[in-house]
Amino acid sequence: MRRKVLFIGVFAVVFLMMVPAFAQEVVKYWMWLDDPTDRTVWEMVEEFNTANPEIKVEIENIPLKDYHDKLVTALSAGAGPDVARFKDWWLGEFHEAGLLEPLSEYIANWPGKNDVIPNLWNTGKIPGEEEIYMMPHQFITFYLYYRKDWFQEAGLKPPVTFDDFLKAAQTLTDPEANRYGFGLRGGSGGQDQWLAFMVAGGARVVDETGNIVINSEKAVAVNQWYIDLYRKYKVAPPSAPTDDYARITGAFKAGITAMIAHHVGSSVIMTEALGDKVGVTHIPVADPANPATMATMSGNVIFATSKVKDAAFKFLSWITETEQMDRWSRSRNGQLPVLKSVAVMDYYNQNEFFRISLEAADFAITWPPLPGVGYVAASVWQVNMQRALLGEISSKEMLDAVAEALKER
Image (cartoon, rainbow, N blue to C red):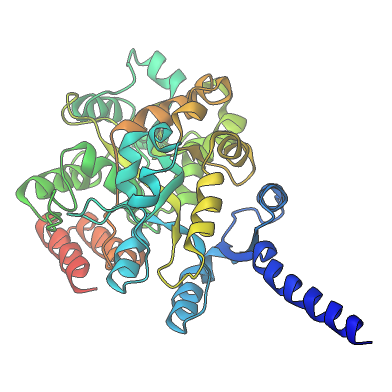
């Protein structure tokens, strides 16, 4: 009996010594999906868990409309995920609250770091800082759709400069025929289209040290040019001050407008509606030597509250590697891949809409990650853009309101 008890005791000690070697680290990953019925991400996570038995990634999918607020609430309560899919414009708010884990040291030792399109690292930084807080993953850039058949009939080439763009818009505008040169989006969500033209004209929201300069003399002039498309040159439909995504895409497909600005996410519906009549080119610029357009990035962050940061980065970097990046980008939730090794694949390189989008990655600019960007995008821009288009306030007054909101929030 005594020998039996001794044996059990020795076995228990050995077992307890072995437990840490087999203990799993649980990594909680929050994300949103445009199409939650697509199982690609779940399948990828299952493969990761099988290949890495010391780590168990647990996914929670949350609708985008609730995502930001749930993150804030959970992290404020000391809970929440270790890793999360993240919008570039949320960085400032969460960085200011001390919730984001710096990633530069991890990235420096990651073999895939040189495969990321260099300019896209900037989407994970705070203005004025070199530290990286967000790993880039999926993105879009704004480009210009145009009616190929109308341009050919009028003897026009796809616009390269602001002057080309205005000339084409004026040539193709005929109000009596209910035809207009440009589908200007003054309603909901139009701030991204507007920012694409603003940066293409040389304006910036912040300077290199993070100072807000959206109401600079240069920005006021570019904004006035944009307002004049509606007020002075009248190349946009009368409904432009309130036109949203559905209205501008509907007008383009219906043959009411000759050009609109959007991204690869609408390329399927455009080609389904117009076939080879739809063309795509870069956003026209004021100075061809300094191209620019607008981009948005959905990346991944690790929170400072996580107790399993090394395991979290192992997963985060794995889903950013070539094979996983290609699978996610081709899925129904995919956008543009951030890796050079994926961007050169025929699937992307031989599709005109992907090719133009990816070319713009070298010079695309995102909204700066300031705490007030969400407030501007949700209401301030739209209210003041509409007032400027209706002549109730000047270009300078509109941009002063935007700058003030960015500073205050």
